[in-house]
Image (cartoon, rainbow, N blue to C red; front, side):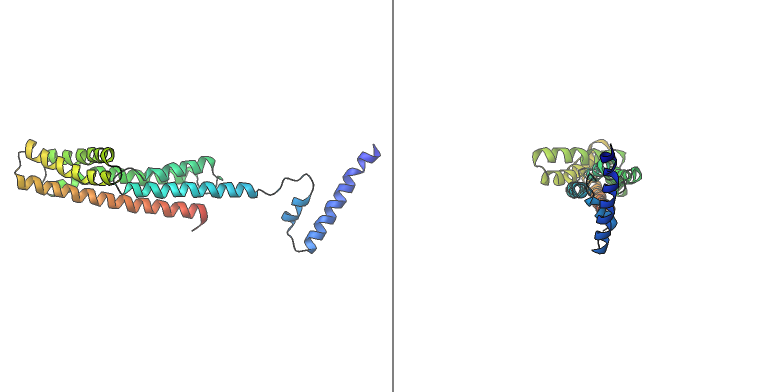
Length: 217
């Protein structure tokens, strides 16, 4: 019993001696304490895993933003990455507030893309039918282009579909002339181009925010 009771004082004495020797060598107490037997080692592996997760999320977000330039909802990839960072991150880089901010920025780009084609057509003199054609044309053209030729087809399909359906709806349903329908179609394309430019800027802002939250860049 005495022998077991003597273990603790002897252990504390060894710890104190180790701490003094490490302080004399210029090592911080937090580092020296990792030498105590039975103490959990520093979480270097966890920091490495966290950094690897951040790299993967950032690379996926960059890819999503580039896809968004083609008219696809790529800005929601950084939103999904923010959600992963909230759920499986370190709990400090990303919070639910930052997730909501990312969601609102990405959603604003998608909403703007759907209405700018119609607004552009309207400013070019299009009727309600032409504005509806601009919205449907951009959506259906992007889907059809992606099916036919991914990436390049998506980009071409968005503009081609926007122009074509605006022209057809103006000419068939609004009884406009060929010249008026063509002008409305080009106005819809200009509006769609402005929306895609905004989406790219919004995606770039999301990437900057993500890099800042992850690494303080």
